[in-house]
Length: 500
Image (cartoon, rainbow, N blue to C red; front, side, top):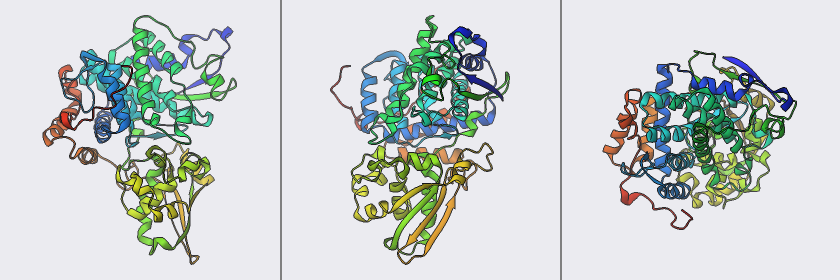
């Protein structure tokens, strides 16, 4: 890997294109580098994971709305829509919109956390949709997905967005554009313009993850993927973009991030170096914000040590800055303590999550968030006794570059009414690659089968799993079949009223 220095330049500097970050990412996307076997295996795992969580959410409100909008844009030879049959094809940007929303709805697919945070599996819907519409084979699809992961994770390792209240999709727009560039074999010049356009239109604020969190949290990555497809299309037609987008004196770094004196060092693979960033990402065993994963596992473990949950006086979670301020009491969001809060808000409340996990000893993507579950008086009492505090040691471990020291969990102290204290800590979720029970192919398949049970037929499940596990050998016809269909009668029609 090579570190590329990123700083703001005055327009008068006429910064050479080859010194611009967008060009360096485009050059990476344009290079034909073989995909290593371990990387290909993980990409397949993540396609399975995406499909699992998408089908589990497919009839919920946000995915149903997105699908209804997508189905209003039919296209012969277009892309497939999760849940719909093989005969249904729509414009690829609308398939990316519908499928990306379904993937993100349950907050249950993969994650990467570093200087910023991301769900790099969000690159898959736009890259797959374009592959299906343009007739690309499995090898091209695989390369495009790997590029998308590489770019997004490298940006997340080096450029913090959330400190400036910019949403993490600002890294997804450029990465999806780069992944599509690789998929299509575009020259660096074209992908360079697309990356710049994609960044320019996907810099949005973090209010989507603050206060009363709405369904836009699910739509936001799909929006970035859709805009990335449109940016690539414009660039392929010869259109340019604001340039230099990262280094420009009126660009997002200068005015939305660290300002005109900012200096970032972005790691990117050297020419010819394999793209391995996808191996640094990790999936979820529980449907909730990633910082809660280890703490859910810890709650399961600690409940065995608590003789009487009703005898708990208070609980203190000592954790990282990010966990405390984003999903903890440091956010100062009263909605995180509200029994009538939306599911989207509850899955960003570690106080609620820890209380339910401690009481139930299991976590379910539907039942754990049910309104009647959130309003249970004993749960509300326990929930409201929980607070978080930032611990400098956990913050330092959260930002470690050494995998052996990395941590996304915390230390929990349960103070009983008799004054006794039960304490324990967990650094990494059990499913993390360095956790107690790392996810492997069998776990991804089991997650898929569990989440799709009762929604799709056994034959459809087998068809999809057998197909996608042969990804590198698929021809364009079989890539077009990468989708999971419900029985037509089981698929929600979605809202009827709209413009389209």
